[in-house]
Image (cartoon, rainbow, N blue to C red; front, side):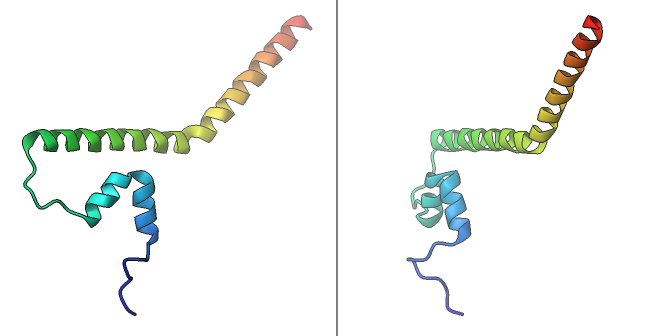
Length: 87
């Protein structure tokens, strides 16, 4: 099998571009110049931001259904309590 051409985009390329177009670009076009300290700090801050944002999305995906189930159960308990009180 021949290696993919430059016109070909893999699923990994698409996912990386969707996550961060700048990261995709720099993976394909690494800068030749040394990185200064301010740029490194800014890059590290960007990586921390992306990690925290992704962690929040993963939490919402993991516990989203449980949150809605708990909300429905709480609503049913409140409605049941009000109905029992008025009965």
